[in-house]
Length: 471
Picture 1 (cartoon, rainbow, N blue to C red):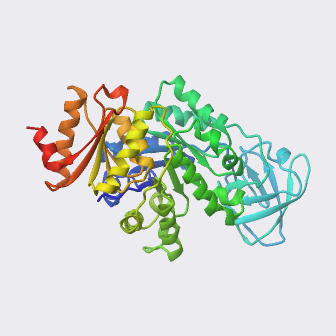
Picture 2 (cartoon, rainbow, N blue to C red):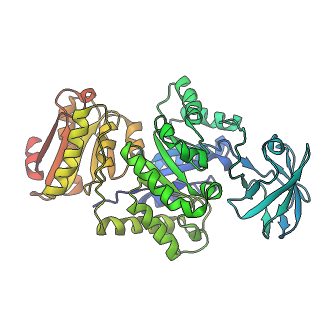
């Protein structure tokens, strides 16, 4: 039984040879993530070309910087101790120097009120704003540490008026379209307008790239419903989220977001520091193993590795470890969920649920379904059945986009012949490739009236009977 939970791995241009990517793919990686906060177009293109060389089934997700604030460059990191006083200046083109910290948002001093807390580097350094003038915030250091260049800045409960997209983001979105990528993960999404800003660029370029909204602030959590109406999927980016929201609330928020995404048939990724210790160590901590297992028990579509694969010492081992934890959870528990219908096509919605229920009651070995858009496949995936879903897809990009969906294993099939003949041949190929036994039961969800009409029937029979159709 193949692993159903998918793995997203961040890959940098510093370590992105075809051999390296192939090693991660064989270890269990399904989707490659490009973190544009640390990349140029040339860097990203290098990773894309090498990924496509390894397999045309690997999805590629481009992660924008989004409306974030970071510390500016500096010639020397600033070591601080509790009680120190530092000043912060909104000066994106300047370098931090001495005890003056420059940040990437020019109106930072104007927007941040006295009494606010400023969290640097996912909360590793906390500052309290004591007073301010037109040029500087005067801040009290709340704990010892080191303030480095290009680190994230969060101001809990303060809404700064950042634009949804920077010039760099716009350039990378257009780059993603030009290079036929599959997903854009937009950072710091606050509401539907942030998603629509990205969608307008995609519409102008006539692109079918899908948008993954990264939820990493309180406003994103509050506006989840309207965001889901316009985004293809969600990434729960717990690093910044845990700075903006009390840490003890994160586990329940994670469960709530995953459940909502499943009900709305939207892929959901759990991200940030899942196996963080494996950047330096060949073994994860027990807490990290429990964290990964908990996300699997929550029925997330995918889990994400960041520094573990981008610059860690044990990238392939990190992917393999995550895959082993997921397999252990899947082997010992049933993942079935009784999700409500949501598709406009009520026939397809009903048949998808019936197919998954039949797979549980009849002990079938697989569900096979064809699709043009992937909608019926995601409907099957929403019930988190125990059978793998072998999607036979008539669009190569949709095939790659399904690499993010729970329990789905997609193949591209052409429409050179009738869709029914093409599907029958695919079923026979799957039976040979997956080495089903003659008596194994297989479920087929398909339609008699053309692929655009959606599913119209379920067929359940043995592998032997399906093979006879090929002759």
